[in-house]
Length: 342
Image 1 (cartoon, rainbow, N blue to C red):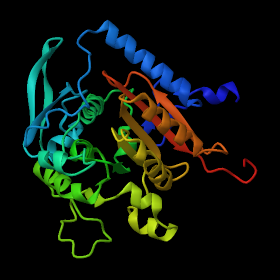
Image 2 (image 1 turned 90 degrees about the horizontal axis):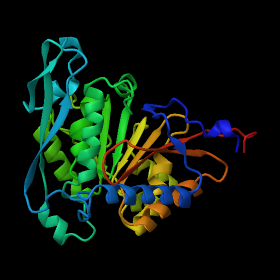
Image 3 (image 1 turned 135 degrees about the vertical axis):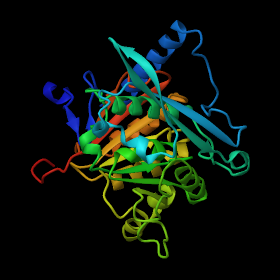
């Protein structure tokens, strides 16, 4: 491979690749680097020990999450963060000195309802409770967007015109956090979890979420930019091409968001098949965030992703240092190959 091809491009759709992002071409090498770095951080920080599977508190019916958003770049009303208007009186500000001025440092409170019974009674249901990865990822991205960080991973101007599809959304926290910054946000998970997602979106945002447009009898107001929909990766994986078109969201994705969905080997082929189908070449950026648990599962996912690209359709970039903690993040981009290129 030409050395220039390993230099990260400035952007991939709505995503700005950080300086130092590296191209993933070997799953074994990437996993070795990730887990060696994780072991070194754990050795240097005695407080960074094992914290279980990664859920926050599965014993509570609801959790109040507070995001520290920092001081916005400007206090001008026209530059106010869109999340403040979209959320139901859950934003607050406290003074922080900058020079001789005291500027408002914003926080955001989000209340997330959990289905703790489903976690124990419904086989394979891990999405009914809140997990650290979603909270930590939301904290990172919200702070970047709120403070107009020039190195923000998601490009605000592009995001405002983007359709985001989230896979395996669980409780719906990320839809609550990010949808005010987007034109349209489609939040998906298995059918059993859709009521919980809808409850949390309605609980925290000014407008209740909409049903998919293909679902008849929807009474949801058109003002909502959030659509909740059932999307089962296994069904997508096993479906015929015609049925896949019916199962998938109607609108093409500009950003496909996959956060903390890699945990069970049996779900990796269906997840990869769904990612590959929903990704539009030269349009859809795929952002995957994973908590580093079982090394072999992460390796299997990465190898499977690379194997989707025998002719070089996919490029995968590893983003280091995005979040504090036992995490990895990758950005995927699929090229439209010409007949000559293949």
